[in-house]
Image (tube, rainbow over all chains, first blue to last red; front, side, top):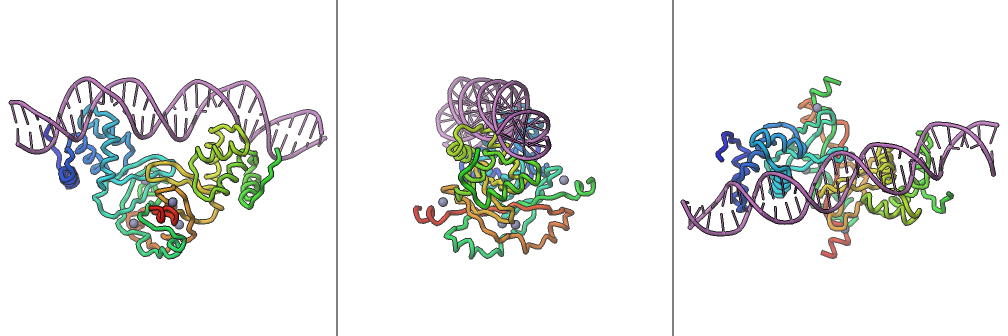
Length: 148
Length: 148
DNA sequence: GAGCTAATTGAAAATCATTCTCATTTAACA
DNA sequence: TGTTAAATGAGAATGATTTTCAATTAGCTC
Ligand SMILES: [Zn+2]
Ligand SMILES: [Zn+2]
Ligand SMILES: [Zn+2]
Ligand SMILES: [Zn+2]
């Protein structure tokens, strides 16, 4: 099936998939598209709905499989909401963090890394080796703050 | 039932519960005890097991209810593991963050806040109002780093 | 200490999210 | 166009979490 949309993210995903010997299926590309156009983080269900809107019937298991794979490939980032819900946001492999609006659940990127200049000395003194970090800000987006 | 243990965390929890007009049940105090003595974050199941070790049969639903309540009261902190698993660590209401060992899942506190000096200007420029933050470091604890 | 009452608990059922299985389909490549 | 391994869909299975409701209990009063 040929697709009638094409965005930077899509070519990027295609490329990575090819590199890894993985197939660029319509389902996978649709996930990229949905995520890219939404401008907010999406739950698995929302992504599923979005993909169904493009392709018609699509298995939920495929969505799960795709998102897990994309996360491994660095294409998407998995987010955790305070309520434990799972969210995914597109990430072009850059080091970005996210702020999450607790009202609308919208996700907004910010490219600076808040822990970049943090001195790990005290942490390392405990013998801990830091390999990764997870930073997420919570608050209200412009719209929701106005509405409140 | 009278309890034969008593720790700072327990009195602290009792106090908060009383303040809020909530009951200090043996189940709730046992959760505090288990969390406090473990020295690492625990999954709901582990907490359940720990409580059963103290009280004998205890309903899992009670554990869930207690942990949710404790989180609202600021007594415990909920953590998210990369695999989506839920963890809880005791938190004396202070502002602490956690580092999580990806091998043993142990959780270690560190009292400094890595985002404390972060300049939110760029974030605020987007109209976002920051209310809270979630920071968690991932890596290896001393023991696991040696074992590897 | 006994009695009262609302809060809490336990057990099981219900719900919800996620993963697995396997027969069928498809993308990639020759 | 044919071949083949990879991927999908549908539904079953699993697992985690929440709900329900009758029975129990903590905290208070006397
Ligand atoms: Zn919002
Ligand atoms: Zn960072
Ligand atoms: Zn460890
Ligand atoms: Zn902090």
